[in-house]
Length: 144
Image 1: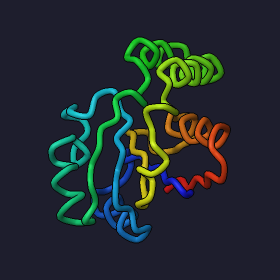
Image 2: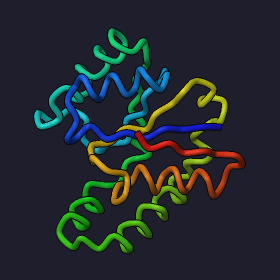
Image 3: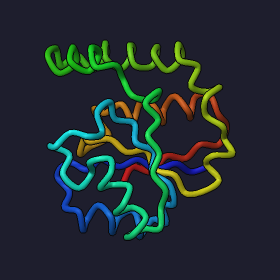
Image 4: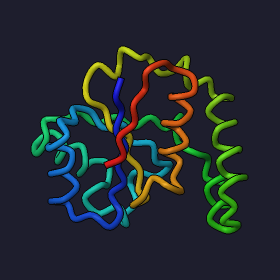
């Protein structure tokens, strides 16, 4: 199973949607805490839903249970302690029983996890995909 990740920050709308189209993405799973922020530009929830269908023929989902808590995110922004954040977020995934919430069959279409960070290096989407790789067999991750 292959899953993709993408962040929208530092991308133009053209680059963002062209990247999704080139990679055959058919469903985008938004893992942000706040998907309606004015700062999100073209990636604001309702606009993103529209653009995904019209430009990529892709479906949009918001799986809030995959997002970190606001408190957790705020503490990370203040402390910049990635190790603590990674440990807390991974614990949150386990505590929320995300493996029971996610069905592998859902990923039969090319699926991309979305958040705002430009790079997956210090982003919870990379922690999420690592978690899936550790618990499910044959998970390949492609960061766009």
